[in-house]
Length: 268
Image 1 (tube, rainbow, N blue to C red):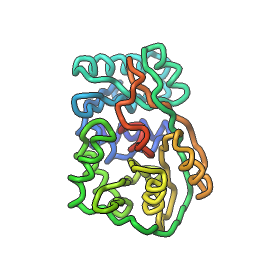
Image 2 (tube, rainbow, N blue to C red; image 1 turned 60 degrees about the vertical axis):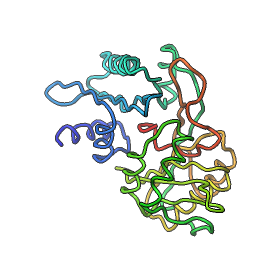
Image 3 (cartoon, rainbow, N blue to C red; image 1 turned 90 degrees about the vertical axis):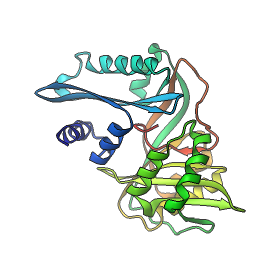
Image 4 (cartoon, helix red, strand yellow; image 1 turned 45 degrees about the horizontal axis):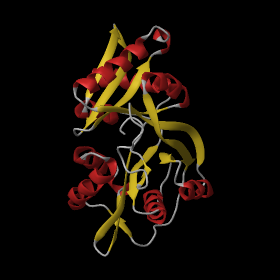
C-alpha cells in the first residue's frame, strides 16, 4: 500500500487524475516498474491485453529527477518486455510524447481529445438502461470484438467503481453499446464507451451524465465529429490532445468506427 501511495504522489505532482484504486488495478493487470532513491522517483506500467498487444502507461518522473534519462530507460524497458511477450506495444501519447515516440518506431493510429466539464446534468434518454452485473459477460464478449482483446476483469472492476454511471443500449435483444466510468482523484472519468452508431453513443453518454454532479473527464476519438459537436454543445471544453500509437504498425488493433471513448490513456 505504501508503494501505491507513493505512485499516487507521482501522478499528483504531474496533475494526473489517477487514484489508489487505479494504481492497484494496473498493478494487478500488468507489470509495474519503479525507480527508488529512498522514495519512488519514477514509474512505468506495461498492461498486457490478451495475446495481441500491451499498453505502456504511467511513465512518470518526479521533477528533481527529470532530464536524467529515467523516462527513456523506462520506455525502452517496456518496449523490450512487450517484445519478450510477443505483443505489440501501444500507448496514447501527448503531443510532446508523440515527438519522442515517432523516432522509436511508433505509428499514428488515431487522434483523441480529453474533454472536461463541471457539473454537467442531463436527463436520462429513452432506450438506455442501467448495466447489471448479469450483463457483464455479454458486454465483455461484445467488447472483445471492438477493443481487440478480452478484458472482462477490467470491465467488471469499472462497473464496481461507478455502477450508477454504467449503462447498456439494446435493440431487438441485441447489444448496441455500453458505457462505464470510474471515480478519479480530480474528476469522474467516463469511458470506455463503444457503440454501433454516433446516435447510440450520444444516448449512452447522456445516460452516464444524467444528474451528474462535479467535474467530468472523458477521452473521445476525434474522428467522431458529431460527438465532438455534441460535447461542445453540452458544455464540455477541450483540455488536451492525445495520439493513439502502435509500435511498428499503422493498422488499428481496435475498431475505431465503434470506439467513441477510451477507458483512459493509462488503460488503453
